[in-house]
Image 1 (cartoon, rainbow over the protein chains, first blue to last red):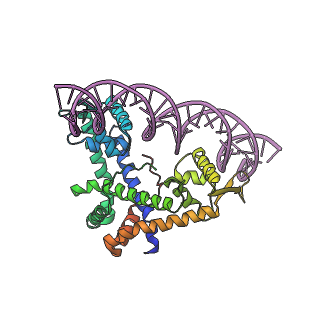
Image 2 (tube, each protein chain N blue to C red; image 1 turned 120 degrees about the vertical axis):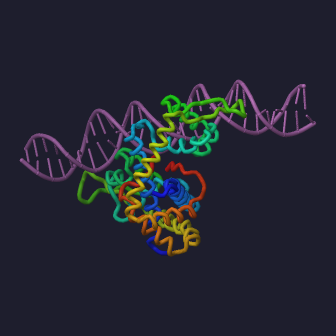
Image 3 (cartoon, rainbow over the protein chains, first blue to last red; image 1 turned 60 degrees about the vertical axis):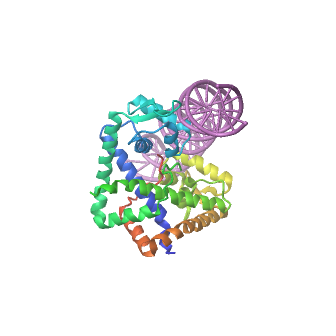
Length: 147
Length: 147
DNA sequence: ACTATTTGGTCAAGCAGATTGACTATCGGA
DNA sequence: TCCGATAGTCAATCTGCTTGACCAAATAGT
């Protein structure tokens, strides 16, 4: 084991943080200043066909109560709505509002913007290789980092 | 910009989390069950010649009060001591105790242990390349991810 | 069909880790 | 020698999350 691989944790963390911070800043700059990165993780799950509170909780790796609270906040802010669930009357389906969709598009743009200098630095080849390598390493677990 | 580069954030986050979680688990398994990853970031700064509360706060990207609180906790648990600062009577120098050093060694071992399967998966060549690429991307900013 | 258990969600209270604000002691330059 | 800046702590507060209790609807067992 190469000795200086030991700072790989630090590098990984720095890169991850730079990325998330950059995206967050981009999203705020586009007018969505009342959101945190944690909300972005929620949006990622809701995009598509929506999700229940329970599914969201699992995705975010928090309790249902915490997820429910966040949903309440997002409803208040106008990013999502709670509707009846087509298959289960107990459950409620959370879906993005137009504002919520606009925000996810903004996030995609922001992400692309942050990634652009990375592509410039490394070249598209090595960036793609980086992505490929990471995809072989990353366990498909939760991603919320509550440290 | 390649379209599927957009999940690089997710991959980066997964990898970072897997790494930190793995190290944390390894540290706990070695008998230091009363510490969280956040403490590890503090230890990283204290290893060497120690640091003041202010320096620690900057490193962790928290207020001095928060850092002071953590130091108090680490003192209580026996990992660090507060000593007088050689150059400044206002400041106090925080240094690791033998127990603190033992813990940092444990963390290094744990990190190596987590990295080993990574080296097996990617091969030493590409792992080194990964490290090199990341080191070109990572801004030398804070790493504490409080999302 | 009828009851019992499980599951989806919310309400309420409490905790942990951070923040802001106020204060003391010391440093260092005019 | 004074006075603003800096190191650190004490105290109060905020926020996001957890645990615990609960209701309503779904599902399983008989």
